Length: 116
Image (cartoon, rainbow, N blue to C red; front, side, top):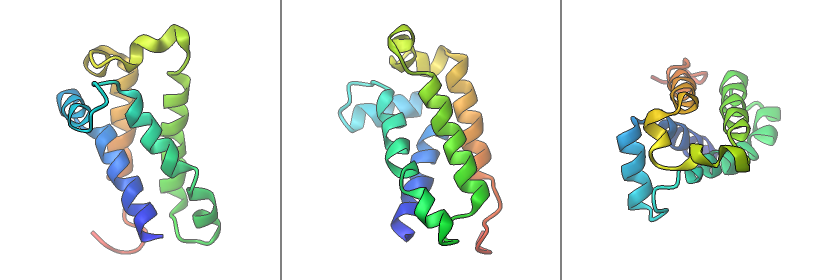
């Protein structure tokens, strides 16, 4: 459970990074800068949230916001929107500005378990 929550936080933190930092991250992991890796990482964690949430191990507000970000990224998909996944789009597309804003909102949610 802890690894899923840590993974979720790391993935969302990457979505909150400035565009230049996102491109650098993508370069370092060898994706050629294609931004779809950011969405794929979130998707891989979001699918694990439901059973954790049902068991009361994930804060519903965190899970809901993570799903909202994932849905937004899904709306950016499709052949006609392929340009949104190019490295330059991270700086220029308003969709990525909104993704970053939601990711930052997630990071500033109060800790439901009393931590800081």
